[in-house]
Length: 405
Image (cartoon, rainbow, N blue to C red):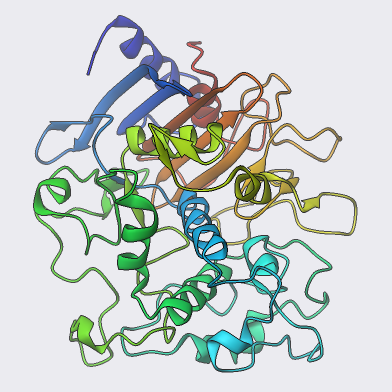
C-alpha cells in the first residue's frame, strides 16, 4: 500500500469540501482498475479507531447494497446451471404462494425481484427476522406490498426483494446462502470475503473495518479483532444455533441485500469480472450473455413508472438517484432533468451499484467502453446524502472522480 501526498490531499479535499458536505470520514479507500488489474490505490484514515489501525485496501468492510450485485452474480451461475429460471413463478420453489394481495393472478419472478419491480416495499421490515423466524410471515404483512402498483409495472427499490432471492437460491440447491455464495462466487475468484462473517477465517475477521456513525460511535463490526460470536440475528430464545437453519425459510439471515464483507481490492476484482464479460484472471465465472442480462437496464425512469430514491435511507431521500436499473445493477448518467445519477460529473454511462448504511457509503462502477473502473468506500458519515452535482454525497462525488478539490 502506497501512502503518498496525493492520498493525503484527496482525504483532505473530501474532509474540507465545506460545512454542507458532511463530516470528515473516519476512513476512505479508493481503488482504480482496468481489465488487467489495479491501476491506483488511495487509502486514508482508520479501520478501527480504538485499535488505531490504519485502513488498507485489503481490509474487509460491509459494503451495503453492492452485496445485491454480487448476489445476482450467484443467481446467474445457478441460471446457467439450469437450477433457476429468471422468468418462472418463484412460488414453485418457495413452497408457498408469493402474490401481491391486490393482484393474485400475477406471478412474481426472479427477474422482477432482482430489478425491484415486484411491488414489494421495506415498510414491514426485511433484516430483523430471527434465526427461527419465517420470511413468509413478513410477506403476510400488508405493509410489505405497494398497494397501488401491480408487479412488473413500477420500480420501487426495496431491500426485501433480496432475502426472497436468497430463499429461492437455498430452495433450488439445499445449501445455506452464505455457503452457497462462497462456492459460487467468492472462492472461485479467490476472494477473502463472506456474507455476515460465518465463512470468513479469523485472520480476515481481524482486519474488519469498523463502521461508525457521523458522531464517531461504532455501529457495526466492532469485534476487537475477532470473529463475531453470532453472525446472524439470534433466535427468539436468544440462542444462536445455526443447525436450526432450514433451506428457504429465512433468506434474510446472511443479509444478501447488504451483508457482504469484502475489501476494496475484492470489489475491484468483481468489477474486472464484469469488464471481462464474465472472466477475470483466467477464471470464467459467467458467460458474456449472463453479464449482459445483469447489466442491461430493464427499467428506465419516466414520469409515473417508478421512484427515483430509496425509502429506507435516513433523512430526505435524494431524488433522481435511481434512473436506470437492470438485475441488481445501476446505470449512471441518465439524461433528463429529473435524473441526478452522475457522481462522476462526466456524462459517462457507467454500470455497477452503490451502497449506504451504518455511516458507510460505497460504490463499484465500471466504464465498459474504456475498460476502466473504480471501487470505493468511506465510513463515519451522516445517513443523508448532500452533493454538489448529483443525488450522491459530496464524499462519493470526490471518491468517484478521484479529483482533489
